[in-house]
Length: 522
Image 1 (tube, rainbow, N blue to C red):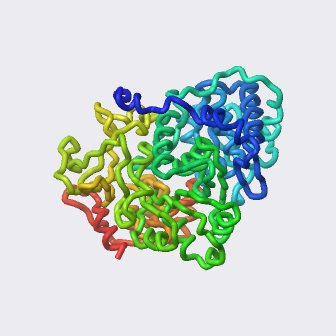
Image 2: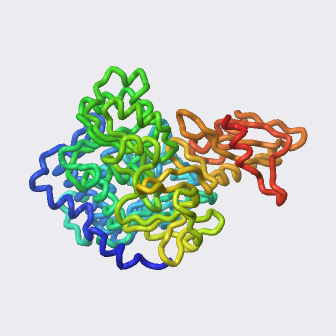
Image 3: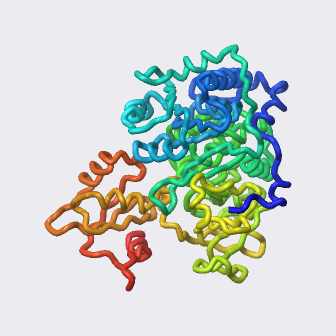
Protein backbone atom coordinates (compact mmCIF):
# COMPACT_ATOMS: atom_id res chain seq x y z
CA UNK A 1 0.00 0.00 0.00
CA UNK A 2 1.25 3.49 -0.76
CA UNK A 3 2.04 5.90 2.05
CA UNK A 4 -0.22 8.77 3.03
CA UNK A 5 -0.44 11.52 0.45
CA UNK A 6 1.24 14.85 1.06
CA UNK A 7 -2.18 16.46 1.45
CA UNK A 8 -3.14 14.14 4.31
CA UNK A 9 0.19 14.57 6.08
CA UNK A 10 -0.25 18.35 5.97
CA UNK A 11 -3.61 17.95 7.75
CA UNK A 12 -2.20 15.85 10.58
CA UNK A 13 -2.05 17.69 13.94
CA UNK A 14 1.58 16.71 14.66
CA UNK A 15 0.97 16.20 18.38
CA UNK A 16 -0.04 13.47 20.78
CA UNK A 17 -2.49 13.08 23.63
CA UNK A 18 0.48 13.44 26.00
CA UNK A 19 1.28 16.80 24.41
CA UNK A 20 -2.34 17.86 24.95
CA UNK A 21 -2.26 16.83 28.61
CA UNK A 22 0.97 18.76 29.21
CA UNK A 23 -0.63 21.91 27.79
CA UNK A 24 -3.51 22.06 30.29
CA UNK A 25 -2.14 20.16 33.30
CA UNK A 26 -0.95 23.32 35.13
CA UNK A 27 -4.54 24.63 35.11
CA UNK A 28 -6.45 21.33 35.34
CA UNK A 29 -4.24 19.23 37.61
CA UNK A 30 -6.62 19.21 40.58
CA UNK A 31 -9.76 18.68 38.48
CA UNK A 32 -11.39 15.24 38.38
CA UNK A 33 -10.13 13.33 35.35
CA UNK A 34 -11.90 10.00 35.77
CA UNK A 35 -14.84 8.56 37.69
CA UNK A 36 -14.65 4.79 38.06
CA UNK A 37 -17.36 3.58 40.42
CA UNK A 38 -16.52 5.04 43.81
CA UNK A 39 -13.04 6.07 42.67
CA UNK A 40 -12.36 9.63 41.56
CA UNK A 41 -8.88 10.49 40.29
CA UNK A 42 -7.60 13.97 39.50
CA UNK A 43 -5.45 14.57 36.45
CA UNK A 44 -2.42 14.90 38.72
CA UNK A 45 -3.12 11.63 40.55
CA UNK A 46 -3.80 9.79 37.31
CA UNK A 47 -0.60 11.08 35.71
CA UNK A 48 1.39 10.03 38.78
CA UNK A 49 0.09 6.48 38.33
CA UNK A 50 0.85 6.67 34.62
CA UNK A 51 4.45 7.69 35.27
CA UNK A 52 4.91 4.99 37.89
CA UNK A 53 3.52 2.23 35.68
CA UNK A 54 5.54 3.46 32.71
CA UNK A 55 8.72 3.25 34.80
CA UNK A 56 7.69 -0.18 36.08
CA UNK A 57 7.23 -1.44 32.52
CA UNK A 58 10.57 -0.02 31.47
CA UNK A 59 12.25 -1.78 34.40
CA UNK A 60 11.06 -5.20 33.17
CA UNK A 61 12.28 -4.52 29.65
CA UNK A 62 9.26 -3.06 27.87
CA UNK A 63 10.27 -0.18 25.63
CA UNK A 64 9.84 1.72 22.37
CA UNK A 65 8.11 -0.27 19.64
CA UNK A 66 7.10 -3.10 21.96
CA UNK A 67 3.43 -4.08 21.99
CA UNK A 68 1.50 -3.75 25.25
CA UNK A 69 -1.76 -5.70 25.09
CA UNK A 70 -4.54 -4.95 27.56
CA UNK A 71 -7.68 -7.02 27.90
CA UNK A 72 -9.33 -4.81 30.49
CA UNK A 73 -12.88 -3.67 31.24
CA UNK A 74 -13.80 0.01 31.59
CA UNK A 75 -11.64 0.91 34.58
CA UNK A 76 -9.07 3.49 35.62
CA UNK A 77 -6.28 0.94 35.14
CA UNK A 78 -7.04 0.86 31.41
CA UNK A 79 -6.39 4.61 31.27
CA UNK A 80 -3.11 4.12 33.13
CA UNK A 81 -1.89 1.32 30.85
CA UNK A 82 -2.86 3.27 27.74
CA UNK A 83 -1.07 6.48 28.64
CA UNK A 84 1.90 4.69 30.24
CA UNK A 85 2.55 2.70 27.07
CA UNK A 86 2.52 5.87 24.99
CA UNK A 87 4.87 7.48 27.52
CA UNK A 88 7.60 4.92 26.80
CA UNK A 89 6.98 4.76 23.06
CA UNK A 90 5.21 1.40 23.13
CA UNK A 91 2.32 0.31 20.90
CA UNK A 92 -1.08 -0.10 22.58
CA UNK A 93 -3.07 -3.22 21.69
CA UNK A 94 -6.56 -3.06 23.24
CA UNK A 95 -8.30 -6.46 23.37
CA UNK A 96 -12.03 -6.71 24.06
CA UNK A 97 -12.65 -8.52 27.41
CA UNK A 98 -15.25 -10.86 25.92
CA UNK A 99 -12.60 -12.49 23.71
CA UNK A 100 -11.57 -15.94 24.85
CA UNK A 101 -8.76 -18.43 24.12
CA UNK A 102 -9.23 -18.62 20.37
CA UNK A 103 -9.23 -14.89 19.66
CA UNK A 104 -6.70 -13.94 22.34
CA UNK A 105 -4.17 -16.57 21.26
CA UNK A 106 -4.33 -15.31 17.66
CA UNK A 107 -3.96 -11.64 18.64
CA UNK A 108 -1.05 -12.23 21.02
CA UNK A 109 0.79 -14.31 18.42
CA UNK A 110 0.08 -11.77 15.66
CA UNK A 111 1.28 -8.77 17.69
CA UNK A 112 4.20 -10.45 19.44
CA UNK A 113 3.10 -8.61 22.60
CA UNK A 114 5.74 -8.21 25.28
CA UNK A 115 3.27 -7.42 28.08
CA UNK A 116 -0.37 -8.42 28.58
CA UNK A 117 -2.50 -6.77 31.28
CA UNK A 118 -5.65 -8.63 32.35
CA UNK A 119 -8.18 -8.48 35.21
CA UNK A 120 -8.16 -11.09 37.97
CA UNK A 121 -11.84 -11.72 37.42
CA UNK A 122 -14.41 -9.95 35.31
CA UNK A 123 -18.08 -10.88 35.14
CA UNK A 124 -17.23 -14.11 36.90
CA UNK A 125 -14.57 -15.18 34.41
CA UNK A 126 -11.06 -16.21 35.54
CA UNK A 127 -8.67 -14.47 33.12
CA UNK A 128 -5.38 -15.75 34.61
CA UNK A 129 -6.56 -19.35 34.17
CA UNK A 130 -7.37 -18.67 30.51
CA UNK A 131 -3.99 -17.06 29.86
CA UNK A 132 -2.13 -19.79 31.75
CA UNK A 133 -3.65 -22.40 29.42
CA UNK A 134 -2.51 -20.64 26.23
CA UNK A 135 0.25 -22.49 24.34
CA UNK A 136 2.18 -19.23 23.94
CA UNK A 137 1.90 -16.02 25.93
CA UNK A 138 3.88 -12.78 26.29
CA UNK A 139 7.05 -12.72 28.45
CA UNK A 140 5.16 -10.64 31.02
CA UNK A 141 1.54 -10.81 32.20
CA UNK A 142 0.25 -8.35 34.82
CA UNK A 143 -3.00 -8.92 36.70
CA UNK A 144 -5.32 -6.13 37.92
CA UNK A 145 -7.36 -6.81 41.05
CA UNK A 146 -5.27 -9.37 42.90
CA UNK A 147 -2.23 -11.57 42.56
CA UNK A 148 -2.29 -14.71 40.42
CA UNK A 149 0.30 -17.48 40.58
CA UNK A 150 3.02 -17.13 37.97
CA UNK A 151 2.02 -13.61 36.91
CA UNK A 152 2.94 -10.07 37.92
CA UNK A 153 0.68 -8.07 40.20
CA UNK A 154 -0.37 -4.87 38.43
CA UNK A 155 -0.36 -2.74 41.59
CA UNK A 156 3.06 -4.04 42.63
CA UNK A 157 4.49 -3.38 39.17
CA UNK A 158 3.09 0.15 39.27
CA UNK A 159 4.45 0.82 42.76
CA UNK A 160 7.87 -0.51 41.76
CA UNK A 161 8.13 2.39 39.34
CA UNK A 162 7.45 5.17 41.86
CA UNK A 163 10.42 7.53 41.88
CA UNK A 164 12.15 5.84 38.95
CA UNK A 165 13.44 7.92 36.07
CA UNK A 166 11.99 7.07 32.64
CA UNK A 167 14.64 7.00 29.93
CA UNK A 168 12.52 6.28 26.83
CA UNK A 169 11.06 9.09 24.73
CA UNK A 170 7.26 9.39 24.45
CA UNK A 171 5.49 8.18 21.35
CA UNK A 172 5.93 10.38 18.27
CA UNK A 173 2.84 11.75 16.49
CA UNK A 174 3.42 9.78 13.29
CA UNK A 175 4.65 6.56 14.92
CA UNK A 176 2.57 3.40 15.09
CA UNK A 177 0.61 3.84 18.32
CA UNK A 178 -2.29 1.35 18.17
CA UNK A 179 -3.02 -2.14 16.93
CA UNK A 180 -6.80 -2.59 16.95
CA UNK A 181 -8.28 -5.94 16.00
CA UNK A 182 -11.58 -6.05 14.16
CA UNK A 183 -13.58 -8.96 12.85
CA UNK A 184 -14.51 -8.84 9.20
CA UNK A 185 -15.29 -11.37 6.52
CA UNK A 186 -12.22 -13.40 7.37
CA UNK A 187 -12.15 -15.97 10.17
CA UNK A 188 -9.31 -14.29 12.06
CA UNK A 189 -9.54 -10.68 13.24
CA UNK A 190 -7.52 -8.09 11.34
CA UNK A 191 -4.96 -5.89 13.07
CA UNK A 192 -5.58 -2.24 12.13
CA UNK A 193 -2.65 0.17 12.53
CA UNK A 194 -3.17 3.76 13.72
CA UNK A 195 -0.92 6.60 14.82
CA UNK A 196 -1.62 9.50 17.14
CA UNK A 197 -1.85 11.70 14.04
CA UNK A 198 -4.61 9.65 12.42
CA UNK A 199 -6.76 9.41 15.55
CA UNK A 200 -6.17 12.95 16.83
CA UNK A 201 -7.10 14.37 13.43
CA UNK A 202 -10.40 12.51 13.79
CA UNK A 203 -10.93 13.76 17.33
CA UNK A 204 -10.05 17.38 16.61
CA UNK A 205 -12.69 17.39 13.88
CA UNK A 206 -15.24 15.99 16.35
CA UNK A 207 -14.26 18.61 18.92
CA UNK A 208 -14.80 21.44 16.44
CA UNK A 209 -18.12 20.16 15.09
CA UNK A 210 -19.53 19.40 18.55
CA UNK A 211 -18.13 22.50 20.29
CA UNK A 212 -16.51 20.29 22.95
CA UNK A 213 -14.59 22.00 25.77
CA UNK A 214 -13.04 21.08 29.12
CA UNK A 215 -16.40 21.87 30.70
CA UNK A 216 -18.01 18.87 29.00
CA UNK A 217 -18.35 15.60 30.91
CA UNK A 218 -18.04 12.34 28.99
CA UNK A 219 -20.17 9.30 29.72
CA UNK A 220 -18.34 6.16 28.55
CA UNK A 221 -20.36 2.92 28.42
CA UNK A 222 -18.71 1.50 25.27
CA UNK A 223 -15.77 -0.86 25.90
CA UNK A 224 -12.56 1.15 26.09
CA UNK A 225 -10.84 -1.60 24.10
CA UNK A 226 -13.18 -1.01 21.12
CA UNK A 227 -12.57 1.84 18.65
CA UNK A 228 -15.54 3.81 20.08
CA UNK A 229 -14.36 3.53 23.68
CA UNK A 230 -10.76 4.20 22.71
CA UNK A 231 -11.74 7.40 20.93
CA UNK A 232 -14.29 8.75 23.41
CA UNK A 233 -13.04 7.46 26.76
CA UNK A 234 -9.27 6.99 26.50
CA UNK A 235 -8.47 9.82 24.09
CA UNK A 236 -10.96 12.64 23.52
CA UNK A 237 -11.51 13.58 27.21
CA UNK A 238 -7.73 13.86 27.64
CA UNK A 239 -7.28 15.90 24.48
CA UNK A 240 -9.51 18.66 25.93
CA UNK A 241 -8.98 18.02 29.67
CA UNK A 242 -12.52 17.01 30.61
CA UNK A 243 -13.91 14.46 33.06
CA UNK A 244 -14.78 10.96 31.84
CA UNK A 245 -17.21 8.69 33.69
CA UNK A 246 -16.58 5.02 33.04
CA UNK A 247 -19.35 2.41 33.05
CA UNK A 248 -18.25 -1.19 32.80
CA UNK A 249 -21.51 -3.13 32.59
CA UNK A 250 -24.53 -1.63 30.90
CA UNK A 251 -27.56 -0.97 33.09
CA UNK A 252 -30.00 1.68 31.94
CA UNK A 253 -31.01 2.77 35.44
CA UNK A 254 -27.44 3.04 36.67
CA UNK A 255 -26.45 4.83 33.46
CA UNK A 256 -29.18 7.44 33.86
CA UNK A 257 -28.26 7.89 37.53
CA UNK A 258 -24.60 8.47 36.62
CA UNK A 259 -25.50 10.94 33.87
CA UNK A 260 -27.66 12.89 36.32
CA UNK A 261 -25.20 12.71 39.23
CA UNK A 262 -22.07 13.65 37.26
CA UNK A 263 -23.72 16.06 34.84
CA UNK A 264 -22.64 14.11 31.77
CA UNK A 265 -23.02 16.14 28.58
CA UNK A 266 -21.60 13.99 25.76
CA UNK A 267 -21.54 10.34 24.82
CA UNK A 268 -21.26 8.01 21.85
CA UNK A 269 -22.44 4.45 21.50
CA UNK A 270 -24.54 1.87 19.73
CA UNK A 271 -28.32 2.05 19.31
CA UNK A 272 -29.26 -0.14 22.32
CA UNK A 273 -27.66 2.35 24.74
CA UNK A 274 -29.73 5.26 23.43
CA UNK A 275 -32.93 3.23 23.19
CA UNK A 276 -32.59 2.04 26.79
CA UNK A 277 -31.94 5.54 28.12
CA UNK A 278 -35.16 6.66 26.44
CA UNK A 279 -37.42 3.66 27.06
CA UNK A 280 -36.22 1.57 30.00
CA UNK A 281 -38.45 2.15 33.07
CA UNK A 282 -35.35 2.02 35.28
CA UNK A 283 -34.04 5.17 33.58
CA UNK A 284 -37.31 7.07 33.73
CA UNK A 285 -36.84 8.36 37.27
CA UNK A 286 -33.65 10.24 36.47
CA UNK A 287 -33.13 13.65 34.91
CA UNK A 288 -30.77 13.25 31.94
CA UNK A 289 -31.46 16.67 30.45
CA UNK A 290 -27.78 17.56 30.94
CA UNK A 291 -26.91 15.14 28.12
CA UNK A 292 -26.65 17.50 25.18
CA UNK A 293 -25.21 15.13 22.54
CA UNK A 294 -25.51 11.40 21.78
CA UNK A 295 -23.47 10.29 18.79
CA UNK A 296 -25.07 7.06 17.63
CA UNK A 297 -23.51 4.45 15.35
CA UNK A 298 -21.93 1.02 15.19
CA UNK A 299 -25.17 -0.69 14.11
CA UNK A 300 -28.41 0.12 12.33
CA UNK A 301 -29.94 3.25 13.85
CA UNK A 302 -33.72 3.54 13.38
CA UNK A 303 -34.77 7.13 12.63
CA UNK A 304 -37.51 6.85 15.28
CA UNK A 305 -34.89 6.43 18.02
CA UNK A 306 -33.05 9.59 16.98
CA UNK A 307 -36.32 11.52 16.76
CA UNK A 308 -37.35 10.33 20.22
CA UNK A 309 -34.05 11.55 21.66
CA UNK A 310 -34.39 14.89 19.90
CA UNK A 311 -37.87 15.26 21.39
CA UNK A 312 -36.28 14.82 24.84
CA UNK A 313 -33.84 17.67 24.15
CA UNK A 314 -30.87 15.42 23.36
CA UNK A 315 -29.04 16.39 20.19
CA UNK A 316 -28.78 12.82 18.89
CA UNK A 317 -27.37 12.10 15.46
CA UNK A 318 -26.23 9.15 13.40
CA UNK A 319 -22.63 8.72 12.35
CA UNK A 320 -20.68 6.35 10.14
CA UNK A 321 -17.16 4.98 10.38
CA UNK A 322 -15.08 1.90 11.06
CA UNK A 323 -11.90 0.86 12.83
CA UNK A 324 -10.02 1.40 9.56
CA UNK A 325 -11.55 4.85 8.99
CA UNK A 326 -13.04 5.93 12.33
CA UNK A 327 -15.31 8.87 11.52
CA UNK A 328 -16.45 9.42 7.96
CA UNK A 329 -19.69 11.27 8.66
CA UNK A 330 -21.93 12.69 11.38
CA UNK A 331 -22.43 16.26 12.54
CA UNK A 332 -24.20 17.60 15.61
CA UNK A 333 -25.16 20.87 13.94
CA UNK A 334 -26.90 19.29 10.96
CA UNK A 335 -30.54 19.34 9.96
CA UNK A 336 -32.43 17.35 12.69
CA UNK A 337 -34.39 15.52 9.98
CA UNK A 338 -31.18 14.56 8.17
CA UNK A 339 -29.57 13.57 11.48
CA UNK A 340 -32.38 11.06 11.99
CA UNK A 341 -32.82 9.71 8.48
CA UNK A 342 -29.24 9.68 7.15
CA UNK A 343 -25.87 8.71 8.61
CA UNK A 344 -24.71 12.28 8.68
CA UNK A 345 -22.78 14.75 6.61
CA UNK A 346 -19.38 13.67 5.33
CA UNK A 347 -16.66 15.30 7.45
CA UNK A 348 -14.35 18.00 6.07
CA UNK A 349 -11.13 16.65 4.50
CA UNK A 350 -12.75 13.24 4.01
CA UNK A 351 -12.98 12.13 0.40
CA UNK A 352 -15.74 9.71 -0.56
CA UNK A 353 -16.80 7.91 -3.71
CA UNK A 354 -19.78 5.68 -4.42
CA UNK A 355 -18.66 2.99 -6.83
CA UNK A 356 -20.04 0.03 -8.72
CA UNK A 357 -20.08 -2.82 -6.15
CA UNK A 358 -18.71 -5.21 -8.74
CA UNK A 359 -16.14 -2.83 -10.20
CA UNK A 360 -14.87 -0.28 -7.70
CA UNK A 361 -12.98 1.71 -10.31
CA UNK A 362 -16.29 2.89 -11.82
CA UNK A 363 -18.17 5.65 -10.01
CA UNK A 364 -21.95 5.49 -9.77
CA UNK A 365 -24.15 8.44 -10.80
CA UNK A 366 -24.98 11.03 -8.09
CA UNK A 367 -27.57 9.70 -5.62
CA UNK A 368 -27.20 6.09 -6.79
CA UNK A 369 -26.38 3.22 -4.44
CA UNK A 370 -22.94 1.64 -4.59
CA UNK A 371 -19.94 0.58 -2.53
CA UNK A 372 -18.52 3.28 -0.28
CA UNK A 373 -14.85 4.10 -0.96
CA UNK A 374 -13.10 6.61 1.32
CA UNK A 375 -9.78 8.20 2.17
CA UNK A 376 -8.59 11.00 4.42
CA UNK A 377 -6.16 12.00 7.19
CA UNK A 378 -7.80 9.72 9.78
CA UNK A 379 -7.73 6.61 7.62
CA UNK A 380 -5.56 3.90 9.19
CA UNK A 381 -1.96 3.17 8.24
CA UNK A 382 -2.91 -0.26 6.92
CA UNK A 383 -3.08 -3.72 8.47
CA UNK A 384 -0.61 -5.59 10.63
CA UNK A 385 -0.69 -8.28 7.97
CA UNK A 386 0.39 -6.33 4.88
CA UNK A 387 -1.04 -9.12 2.75
CA UNK A 388 -4.52 -7.83 3.61
CA UNK A 389 -3.81 -4.33 2.31
CA UNK A 390 -4.21 -5.09 -1.38
CA UNK A 391 -7.85 -6.16 -1.00
CA UNK A 392 -8.75 -3.16 1.19
CA UNK A 393 -6.75 -0.24 -0.24
CA UNK A 394 -5.88 0.81 -3.75
CA UNK A 395 -2.65 2.45 -4.93
CA UNK A 396 -4.11 5.94 -4.35
CA UNK A 397 -5.03 5.25 -0.74
CA UNK A 398 -8.77 4.67 -1.19
CA UNK A 399 -10.29 2.31 1.39
CA UNK A 400 -12.85 -0.16 0.09
CA UNK A 401 -15.31 -0.25 2.98
CA UNK A 402 -17.46 -3.13 1.74
CA UNK A 403 -20.50 -1.11 2.79
CA UNK A 404 -23.21 0.01 0.42
CA UNK A 405 -24.73 3.48 0.46
CA UNK A 406 -25.49 6.70 -1.35
CA UNK A 407 -24.65 10.39 -0.92
CA UNK A 408 -27.17 13.16 -1.56
CA UNK A 409 -26.55 16.58 -3.07
CA UNK A 410 -25.91 18.14 0.35
CA UNK A 411 -23.19 15.66 1.26
CA UNK A 412 -25.24 13.45 3.60
CA UNK A 413 -24.52 9.73 3.41
CA UNK A 414 -27.00 6.90 3.97
CA UNK A 415 -25.82 3.35 4.56
CA UNK A 416 -28.07 0.90 2.73
CA UNK A 417 -26.38 -2.49 3.21
CA UNK A 418 -23.13 -4.44 3.36
CA UNK A 419 -21.05 -6.43 0.97
CA UNK A 420 -19.10 -7.81 3.90
CA UNK A 421 -20.41 -11.00 5.38
CA UNK A 422 -20.50 -9.73 8.92
CA UNK A 423 -23.11 -9.46 11.64
CA UNK A 424 -23.25 -6.30 13.73
CA UNK A 425 -24.49 -7.25 17.19
CA UNK A 426 -24.68 -4.40 19.72
CA UNK A 427 -22.12 -2.48 17.69
CA UNK A 428 -19.64 -5.38 17.51
CA UNK A 429 -18.57 -6.91 14.20
CA UNK A 430 -18.92 -10.70 14.15
CA UNK A 431 -17.47 -12.71 11.29
CA UNK A 432 -20.17 -15.03 9.93
CA UNK A 433 -17.44 -17.21 8.45
CA UNK A 434 -15.75 -17.64 11.83
CA UNK A 435 -19.00 -18.80 13.42
CA UNK A 436 -19.57 -21.12 10.46
CA UNK A 437 -16.09 -22.58 10.88
CA UNK A 438 -16.83 -23.44 14.50
CA UNK A 439 -20.19 -24.99 13.61
CA UNK A 440 -18.62 -27.01 10.80
CA UNK A 441 -16.56 -28.84 13.42
CA UNK A 442 -19.73 -30.32 14.93
CA UNK A 443 -20.15 -33.94 13.88
CA UNK A 444 -23.91 -33.45 13.53
CA UNK A 445 -23.63 -30.63 10.94
CA UNK A 446 -23.72 -31.40 7.21
CA UNK A 447 -24.00 -27.80 5.97
CA UNK A 448 -24.34 -24.41 7.65
CA UNK A 449 -24.91 -20.75 6.89
CA UNK A 450 -24.74 -18.02 9.52
CA UNK A 451 -26.61 -14.76 8.97
CA UNK A 452 -27.61 -11.71 10.94
CA UNK A 453 -31.30 -11.39 11.71
CA UNK A 454 -32.79 -8.01 12.59
CA UNK A 455 -33.29 -7.63 16.32
CA UNK A 456 -34.79 -4.57 18.06
CA UNK A 457 -32.45 -4.83 21.05
CA UNK A 458 -29.19 -6.05 19.54
CA UNK A 459 -29.39 -4.59 16.04
CA UNK A 460 -28.77 -8.08 14.69
CA UNK A 461 -28.65 -11.49 16.32
CA UNK A 462 -26.53 -14.43 15.22
CA UNK A 463 -28.68 -17.04 13.48
CA UNK A 464 -27.33 -20.46 12.45
CA UNK A 465 -29.14 -22.17 9.59
CA UNK A 466 -28.09 -25.81 9.70
CA UNK A 467 -28.62 -28.89 7.59
CA UNK A 468 -28.08 -31.82 10.01
CA UNK A 469 -26.32 -34.99 8.93
CA UNK A 470 -28.63 -37.90 8.29
CA UNK A 471 -29.84 -39.44 11.52
CA UNK A 472 -28.47 -36.56 13.66
CA UNK A 473 -30.16 -33.85 15.70
CA UNK A 474 -28.83 -30.36 16.40
CA UNK A 475 -30.16 -28.43 19.41
CA UNK A 476 -29.41 -25.02 20.90
CA UNK A 477 -28.03 -26.69 24.02
CA UNK A 478 -25.66 -28.89 22.02
CA UNK A 479 -24.57 -25.92 19.89
CA UNK A 480 -23.94 -23.72 22.94
CA UNK A 481 -21.89 -26.43 24.64
CA UNK A 482 -19.80 -26.84 21.48
CA UNK A 483 -19.00 -23.11 21.32
CA UNK A 484 -18.12 -23.00 25.01
CA UNK A 485 -15.74 -25.93 24.57
CA UNK A 486 -14.14 -24.21 21.56
CA UNK A 487 -13.22 -21.18 23.71
CA UNK A 488 -15.10 -18.68 21.54
CA UNK A 489 -16.28 -15.29 22.81
CA UNK A 490 -19.86 -15.55 24.04
CA UNK A 491 -21.21 -12.79 21.81
CA UNK A 492 -20.43 -15.05 18.83
CA UNK A 493 -22.61 -17.89 20.11
CA UNK A 494 -25.63 -18.41 17.80
CA UNK A 495 -28.81 -17.03 19.38
CA UNK A 496 -31.22 -18.59 16.93
CA UNK A 497 -31.20 -22.03 15.33
CA UNK A 498 -33.01 -22.88 12.11
CA UNK A 499 -32.96 -26.44 10.75
CA UNK A 500 -33.31 -27.01 7.00
CA UNK A 501 -33.28 -29.96 4.63
CA UNK A 502 -31.13 -27.89 2.26
CA UNK A 503 -29.69 -24.39 1.90
CA UNK A 504 -30.69 -22.09 -0.97
CA UNK A 505 -27.78 -21.88 -3.41
CA UNK A 506 -26.88 -20.19 -6.69
CA UNK A 507 -26.18 -22.12 -9.88
CA UNK A 508 -22.50 -22.14 -8.91
CA UNK A 509 -23.29 -23.57 -5.48
CA UNK A 510 -22.83 -20.39 -3.41
CA UNK A 511 -25.24 -20.08 -0.50
CA UNK A 512 -27.82 -17.36 -1.13
CA UNK A 513 -27.62 -15.65 2.25
CA UNK A 514 -29.80 -12.78 1.08
CA UNK A 515 -32.67 -15.25 0.71
CA UNK A 516 -32.14 -16.52 4.26
CA UNK A 517 -31.88 -12.99 5.69
CA UNK A 518 -35.08 -11.90 3.96
CA UNK A 519 -36.93 -15.00 5.11
CA UNK A 520 -35.78 -14.83 8.71
CA UNK A 521 -36.06 -11.07 9.18
CA UNK A 522 -39.81 -10.92 8.42
